[in-house]
Every structure is written in C-alpha cells, then in structure tokens.
Image 1 (tube, rainbow, N blue to C red):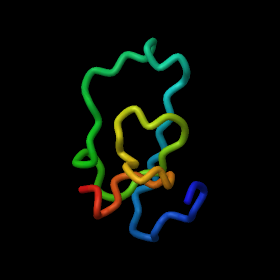
Image 2 (tube, one colour; image 1 turned 135 degrees about the vertical axis):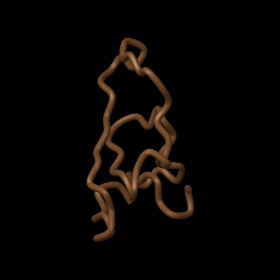
Image 3 (cartoon, rainbow, N blue to C red; image 1 turned 120 degrees about the vertical axis):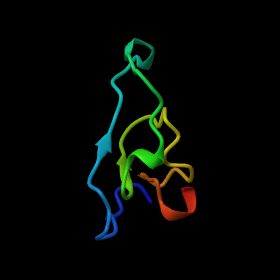
Length: 63
C-alpha cells in the first residue's frame, strides 16, 4: 500500500527520478542487491525495485 510504514529493519532509502526520465544520466542499473533492506519508491519505478507497486521496493519476496 503506498504510504505504508516501512518495517523497522528497512533501510530508509527513497528514490525518485525527475521528469522527463530520459534526461537523467544513470551510469548503471540499480538492483535490490545494492541495498541491505527495503527501499521506499516515490514516483516512477524505472529500476523495477517495487514489483508489486505498493511503494516499498526490495521486499524479501523480490530478492
């Protein structure tokens, strides 16, 4: 659910990409392996970290 509280073990990382996303320079892809816990996803999920669309990415079932 968007806006839901993160579990207490979560890493408090929030990412968002300003529009238009095509102008954002990314040197590499970002994957869940780059984080030690979950991440809060705000805006468009261009790295597909939040597979179920609930606003929390890199949940255990997504790893």
